[in-house]
Length: 98
Image (spheres, rainbow, N blue to C red):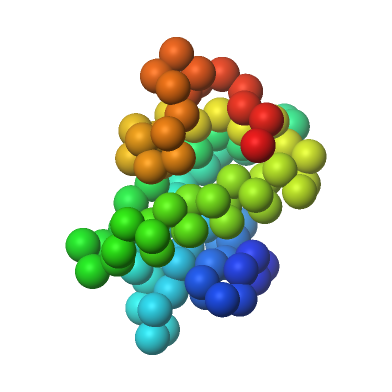
């Protein structure tokens, strides 16, 4: 696991192909992805009801920023992530530059 964001306790669990957000040692958010060459596809993103909207948005942004820093093309097919990050419907399955 790679630590992505120390403040939000976000890690990239490459074995499970998902970003995870922890609170008090418990997973409270998951952003599952698939790698396709130089592209990362975010397929399923969710947080527990205990997470605030700000925490959820920070978590999703941390995952997207990490992909951007790794120079990956980004596809967001997760409706939850797309809506939280306000990605227009027409662009959700297109490559995004963040």
